[in-house]
Image 1 (cartoon, rainbow, N blue to C red):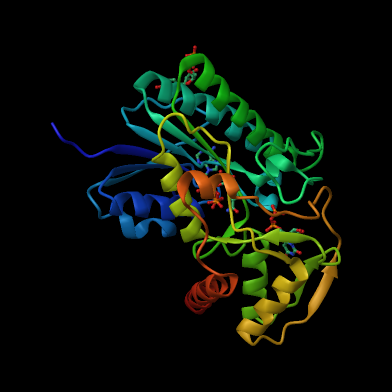
Image 2: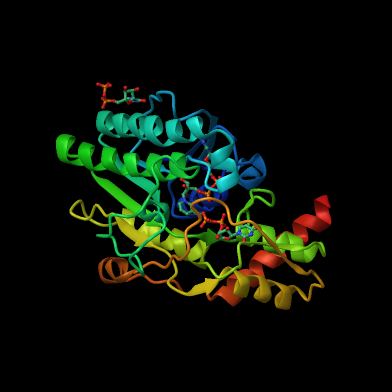
Length: 317
Ligand code: NAD
Ligand code: UDP
Ligand code: UDP
């Protein structure tokens, strides 16, 4: 008998998770969103609560979870440095125990499982742009290690469950992604710069602003995730998903000032420890395998992000 696919999204009340839940519902799936609301908020999913095919469950993925589902997207994990460094032990537990529990669940019910890994597995990269075969340069005892090493260990677990138990796994290494529903106070650079510019506050550049990042708009990223999940079992990843257009942090600040017409000044603060100097994905693998590449320019993506934060500030101050 035909029935809808039952999909579990962990971290579904977060920035990316909420957009993913929305997309999966649009495609006719039943979606179960699991979140402990550590960095996610009900505001991100409130518009989905009336949908009979959407279900919300407050749960911490470091504890076991017994459900009957067909697919899992494992996104639960704080993503911004100030949040993941606030309780670093819990961050590692979320990545490692969370992965074990979700893999155990996938194994028991035979579900396909996606892991939101990260460009941070490359650490402060010596290879530029980063290809999937680069093994990275992570400081295992630094302040970012709870996130970077947690995600690296999660990848190890995914590949061992694949080899040892035959699980259908999909691992994406996501590069900096931005857009509406980023938390205004989560400390990431796009949300910081945009909210600072809109409120006429100083724009805080860490270091001299010469470090680079490559920013992907959320809708491109979600499309890449959906396409990766639709591949046959031979495609496991890890696969880079991100936008190869690279800018310096200083250029980003200047663009935001231009686009908001802000009078904010640039101020320079200390560069946090282990902050990567450069980052840009090589997306050849995704291009060839998924026929995917980002389509939203930084200008267009920043435009809609600025509109989102302008609206939020006018509602909540
Ligand atoms: P986010 O902080 O908005 O979302 C993370 C969600 O996970 C939140 O809703 C949070 O409450 C939830 N969560 C955290 N710990 C949990 C736990 N123990 N149990 C249950 N839920 C928990 O971040 P995001 O940007 O949406 O990131 C989503 C995923 O994508 C994360 O795994 C992140 O590491 C990964 N990622 C994001 C980016 C990016 O630039 N946005 C880049 C690389 C990887
Ligand atoms: N698990 C879960 N839900 C399930 C099945 C397993 O949360 O439906 C968790 C459980 O905590 C278990 C972990 O996943 O310890 C790993 O499961 P696995 O079967 O791989 O190993 P086990 O520890 O059970 O031998
Ligand atoms: N950054 C900055 N000012 C801010 C926030 C961040 O200059 O207010 C810098 C940060 O040091 C890093 C880059 O912007 O070099 C991206 O930071 P983010 O925390 O968004 O992501 P990640 O470092 O994890 O790539």
